[in-house]
Amino acid sequence: MYYVDGDFMSRNDIDAGHISLHPAGIPHGPHPGAAERSIGKTETEELAVMVDTFKPLQVTEDAMKIADEDYYKSWLEHE
Image 1 (cartoon, rainbow, N blue to C red):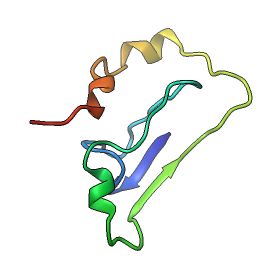
Image 2: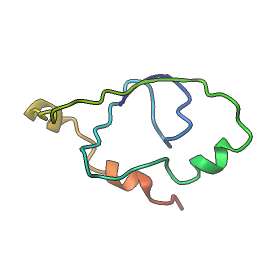
Image 3: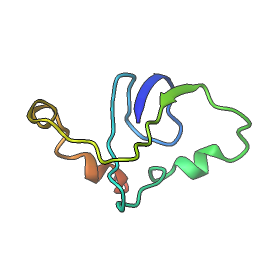
């Protein structure tokens, strides 16, 4: 998913310009607290583009150089 603009309700600490890759078979969902923050909301102020491919994407060496090595930790509760 490419996060373009706005306040990304389902994610914590995400800014415009971030890209996330979720390979098939790896479950994920909203970050801790996001579901609770959505209660009573009727709309969002965000723009994101999701690409669903028929074939797996190939991650390049250049992409790996800028990868956030702690991304998987973003689903842990923050103290």
